[in-house]
Length: 334
Length: 213
Image (cartoon, rainbow over all chains, first blue to last red; front, side, top):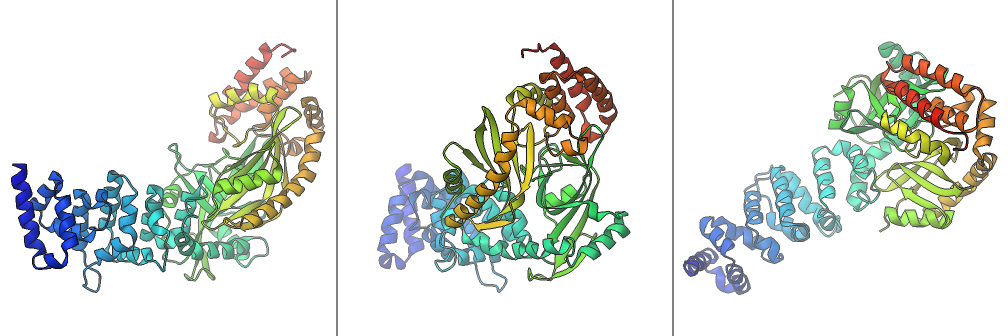
């Protein structure tokens, strides 16, 4: 029975390789060796399109080219169309580095990565192929074999204007995760530049200070902003599961009661967004609807981890997308 | 390509091999022994993909084991968890704003040398004033509460209960009873949830302790 299946596979391959077979003798030799794998030969008989997928990864390690789940995912990718109507160049994607990425991860992670890429628009997969190219981010193929890093890449390409917020959460506790590739430096640069513009503008004497005071008084009845202390990049936990967000700026007003117990009277959260259209991240949106936070940051002088804040007000400072200019501060969110 | 471990090693080289350095994404802790108790210089960090910013407010902290060994189990039981590095006393000081590229290890060394100089001036002076718990007690008793909050770590009244007991303060029972009543009122607020039960349990524990303990 096994011999028969192998024979049929051989005939199928001869048919599919057709007249190219002589020109591609090496490929033919290689596929005949791989066809000794019963699972692969069965898959080729049942789904002839997998032979085309195999050809895309024919130079990849055995663990990639003989994995039928990988081949099925490649087949799906090959059917994707770019906005201009052209087919996604899957060969380029794999040749530029995705084969390398997949060769370094477990079989389960190979499938997870390809499943995820299959869920992207073709243009995002094409962007990855371009970035993996030698002239762009040569270390990216290796970096993507780290599951945490791949998730970070996945999150950022779906919400590029919040790249910095996403990267900051990922780097918490692991200073090397986001430093691995220059890709992250590039995609987070605008966000970092913008934070560098907003923070000084909110401090006493800053360009936005007066408008901040006006909006706090008009919207929230807060008239004593000068009693608040400004902190940058404060992590707040907002539920018992430990989910948290990072406030770009937090204005905190403390109280000390007669016993000496310290408490937070009020917190004003300021989120910096590159443009008016930039939405809050998922964690920021979830936190905004919750009344009570706990300081999660390990060490900020004067703002101890574990202190609770119950009255929280949110404002948004947004720019013109350049990372250099502030457009407005508002209590309205996208 | 440098990593968090490379940066940790440089900080350890700067502060000396007797220190333990722990680097997190949002903080760096440089721990050492001072007169038999643990002390720590704590520096807040903001980590970006390429650079690390150092927060200008820095703390030197000291842990008196005789206080913390009694207090922390009670706090933990009642889910009162203030401060990442649990200290008895602390002093905040300013080290200025710094920023370095994660891969520029020379810049890391230069900045932490500067922080070491500043923290030696501020930290050593502070720690040498408070080698023994008696010195903490005497200094705190001379302070107004507003001043004390910048000296004894939160939750301050609960720590004071232990310090007063260990330093045989005559007003220990009155102080504890007054605080327990106050904590009962405050416990309605989520910010002080469990403080009443913790105060009562701590008082019960402290009352059973003999003077020699």
